[in-house]
Length: 245
Image (cartoon, rainbow, N blue to C red):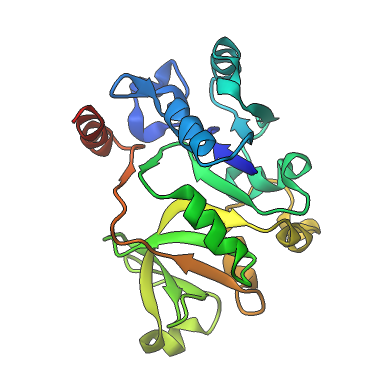
């Protein structure tokens, strides 16, 4: 099974820790977050993992080599010339991810006890082209889902901005969910990334919102999952305490 880990970020929220190392190698209770994610993916059956790199990218290459790629096949999607954001990063990594089976995408700075195998199977058994981990978590930006957990739109509560056009007229119909930074994507979605509109740097969420009217994209929720965004100092500390306990 295939997966991709986003490890190219600048890690600005974790400075000064990331002034001399990539965010993905910042330790959580003594173990680099990238190592934690790789081992969880491996335990769930993912054996071909693509890691994108940018900020101090050579350190990640050296780290993986020193650990014999943790016993799985690792592909490097090199973004050191240009940081491509999440959507552009997935499109660049297409040669490693394309094929006949879905692939899982996992932010390096997300730590969770989500059953990744069950999450992956849920996508396989559905008719969706992408399945996004979501939760009832307080944030300023929400994905808007219908009663069948199909993605319909997005809202920024701080600014009032909504997408796609016209979604605001139906606001009472939708449920608000926070995105959890993990998703499963069917390679058929790559066809909709072709063309000039999706070249270079772009985020995956605006891409999803541009196609959600005609493409089945769904949310997946597990209320018992423990979840940390370890890209922030306060939650990195919380996660470290939880891992030590």
